Image (cartoon, rainbow over all chains, first blue to last red; front, side, top):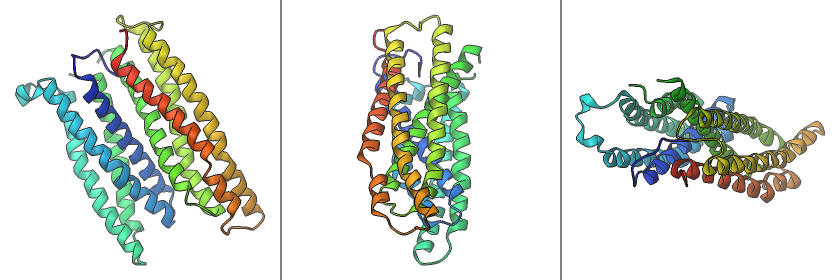
Length: 152
Length: 159
């Protein structure tokens, strides 16, 4: 019952969108948990960062591209933005603004990992990555609620 | 939003928690493969436990709210073929996931025993347990069952 009955040809992009979204969600969970429980341990700090980079980022690209595919297939691109429903705005807000925060988390965390490799402390920067990941987890929960419950 | 919409949203949130937890546990399982000492095994196990909790919570929420929704929605019934297929796949996935948890608890027990004995260096037996292919196979089969549930939910064959 993951989605209501849709028009023909929309199931596959919806499947890709859901696969992308759940993989991003899993990568964010893995990242935030590893970074929160690391206590300065290099292995967990690196796991937290590379979960985002190697799993989360490709899935985020899949999520966003498939979202655009469904958007065009359902004809939302022909509807003026002021007539578009709130749930769609919430979805794009989380995907696009959330995507920028995701990239910020990767850049900040990347500097942290490079600093650790050079023997300096990168834990503080990776803590910023963790905070962004936690924020994105909350944003994704709101997005899932909005996309399924479709308020407005 | 109607009451039915809320149940649907909670069902999908449960499903997202399940798949997200499964993705997280895959990440951790691959990280385990490079671990050879007891302390690192226990550290990584702390992360794995959060993933396991997410998977269990997701399994319960997705099934509970899913059946509730099938009863609430006029268009669907709990005895529809695609709903029954999903419930059967859910049962298979749950059994496989629980067995994979049991498999993955073996290196943790070994790591605790090693630490109790004062050994925190690389250990060949612990490394072998951390690389168990049995646990990987069980997890892969469970993941395949979950993917089939997602496909079944989206395409709703016979609906």
